[in-house]
Image (cartoon, rainbow, N blue to C red; front, top):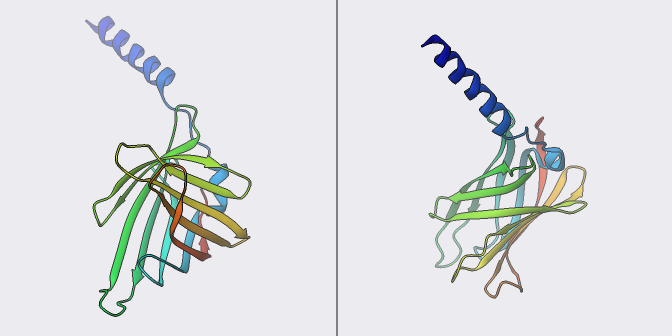
Length: 173
């Protein structure tokens, strides 16, 4: 009986070691990790807000929390938007997938690509649903442009929101 238990524990240990995910590297994200404040404009109007990118779960994921406010204008009421984005590694250990949730009930699955000074999140194709693209572009050492775009046809994107933010605090990944 003890031999069976010992073999089971040994097998489980080997199984978990062999099939566990590699530790993700957040090197491509380092410039975006921290606390940011900014202003922007778009379909909801002129507004401002904050967002943070932080490593969590022993560096296994990145978490972005965002809060923005758009004041009432004319007959349009004030809008408060909160969202959560979780970036997680694919099978190779690269942070190239994300899932988004907001206080309006939206859920978006993203694939992530990188260029020299940009991180581009593009939603997965879902029948009868527009494509979304969220792009962070490093403008200066502590300044970033954020653009959220929508495509109805899957090819031509129109800007829905865009703004610039200044880093107000660095975080270590």
